Length: 77
Image (cartoon, rainbow, N blue to C red; front, side, top):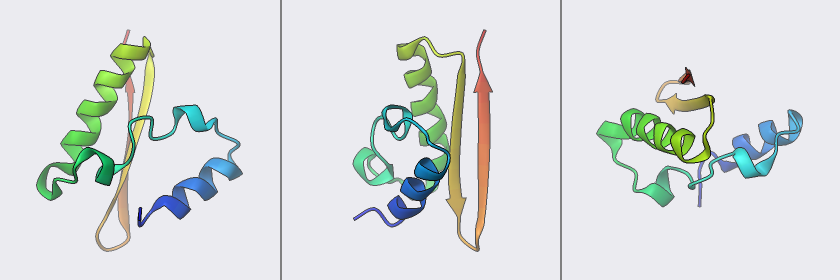
């Protein structure tokens, strides 16, 4: 069970996002959650997916213990 799936689904619905562009390779559990390298794994996966799709913009976010989080927007030209 994805612990944060409810939040992701709620935000996607609220912002009317296309489900085809959200977690396209599954979440952390599907990709093998490596606690020490979660952020790196998310960014590298995003870069590969942007290249595969020919996307110029990509967004990655993650939560951190203690009610913190981070978001990264990548642009390639």
